[in-house]
Every structure is written in structure tokens, then in C-alpha cells.
Length: 88
Picture (tube, one colour):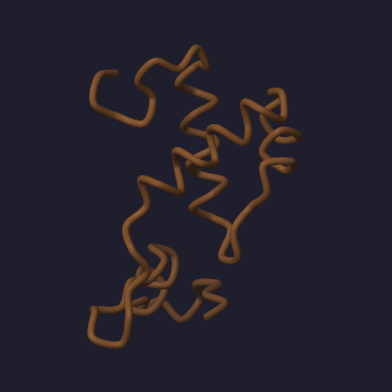
């Protein structure tokens, strides 16, 4: 996929997408060692994947930027169904 972080990588796109999901879901970051364990790739491959994913991430918002919320929080925040299990 030309012009993306996946360009020139022999790693399957499904593993890339799983790695992106792992990085996105970990609020304090994820180690290459954990990516290695989760995806079953070698440590150097996991390290390169993590490096590319982090380089493609947008900058962390500061106090003047709008706040971004997890989609789960957004879906539960406006929940009008009292029986819904929203752990917010």
C-alpha cells in the first residue's frame, strides 16, 4: 500500500491492523515485546511496526486542542436507556 506505514512491509495487513488496534487501545502505550507476543512476530518486526505506528500517530492534544474521547464513552454518555450497562 503505497504512501502508508504498510508500504514495503512483508507483514500481512491483518497483523498490521491488529498492531494498530493494540497501540490505539493501550492508554499508556504498548511495548514491542507485547506486540511480539500478541501477534506472533519476531521482536525486530514488532519493534519496526511499533515505530512506524507511533510515527504516524497525531500529536498529543494540549490544553488548547479539542478533547478526544473513546467511542465507547461517547456511545454510553448519551445513553437514555436506564437498563444499559454503561460503566462510565
